[in-house]
Figure 1 (cartoon, rainbow, N blue to C red):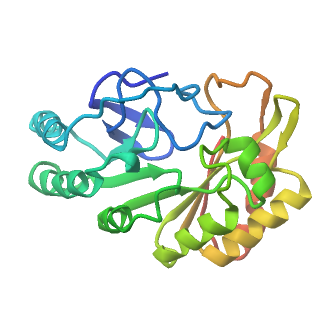
Figure 2: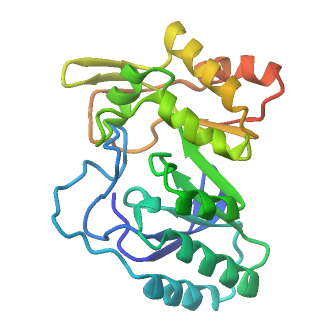
Length: 251
């Protein structure tokens, strides 16, 4: 499922409310630093010169839409891949905040990111300007993270991601997809006691202001995946809620 325009929606997001989407990646194919087995956009495609919308095109399209007087809860950067890959991400966020303040001041600016570009100072600066940074960590161990997310950088580690996330001093939402299944002969399961223990430890280190845990909801590129039942998601959330964390479950 790919978004076909720079601005899409509004749509009802099960996690964010009435959301106007902003697409910074190509409209014809997915472009991401992850190749997650559960991604509704499918697999990455090899494209030598991907076409990204310019900062000016994004600003013009967003202003035209906001001039319609929409009732929005949030303006959301997500879509056909990793939005922070855009080379003008900081400038686009600055433009978006200015337009939001002018036309739709009640709306939050949110970014859904896989956390892989947090080594870039401009990306961190941009995210600190946003109302909601929703940052991914799908597992507490390197093996499971790589099986689930299939990072383009095969040497990416959980420790590296945690180190980057610590820059936000807990002022972000940690997002994790829980699932079970199989991919290319490898077992996928981030719900085992061992995997949950490692993930809980990462949460304790990061101490995010909110956790957003969810399950697969649409068709996935890997067919052999299992949706985790709501009751099990509640059990996963329980130890964190007992410690005072806010946990939102989308199941």
